[in-house]
Length: 265
Image (tube, rainbow, N blue to C red; front, side, top):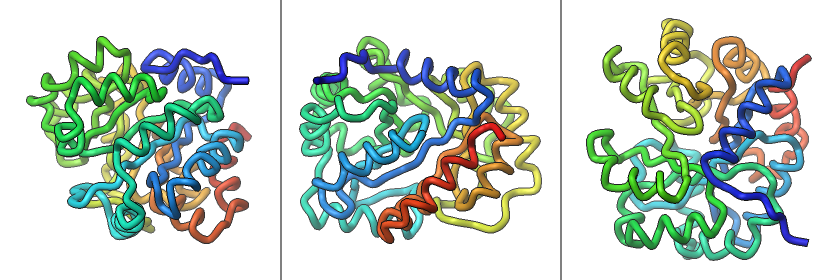
């Protein structure tokens, strides 16, 4: 029987806030659509959702990524070699989205959206049950190109905030972010790390002051200890490169431990 959930920004925000109200931290794993073949996507999403991921960030493979580190870049290349496109991911979700309870957030770049056609993309994304959108290379000042259409469709536009942003910029981005505010925890691209910036706690605290939405820490988080460390400073975490590596190794137990580390003890 098909899931009758109404997806979109409201569903995403309700799910995140319910997690926090239960005393847990938000855990958002990142997966690359089509890594290992498009037929692996729904089983992977279903597994993550059933194991307790609060929401799932779904990367769309793109030939010229600007924010992705080596692990995610290689996953994108593998997906592109399988001829995975934005269109093919959306068409699959239109058929199979009902199997996954967790909210789904697309992480894509503006070029594939332009190629698709902004209005057509948003219409199809809505039909596919996409709840939020992250576009790393779309400048804040140009977001009007897509934001009005997203608001009409009820899809959240999530803002990325870097450590090097000015206080004025941080406030601007945090106040505009929908669903959650994505706090970048390192200076640079994605990928597992052992150390984070010394002023990170102050940065996250300032973001929480400005953001009415939950603040999630992302980039470089790769262990249960990192998840707990970041959970003490933010509302939750986004884990990307490590999830991709563990899925490749079929190490589901380590993924379960990462998710579990976000739960209240």
